Length: 81
Image (tube, rainbow, N blue to C red; front, side):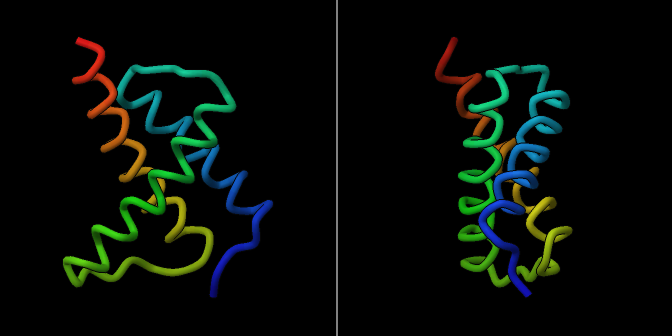
């Protein structure tokens, strides 16, 4: 069961915000949404390539978005240095 576009934006923003809090990096609300959505896509691609299944729906999207956002923020932190 997938999520709609509006739900993906809201969940992606929440995932990006949570990852920003955890990694202590803040880019603003718009970038948090973008990082959350891109992070979810990135993590989903990595997980499917590795054969790891994450729950579907809003909870699965939140978890993958959070993990992917943390990966993106880590890379951004390395690039900034």
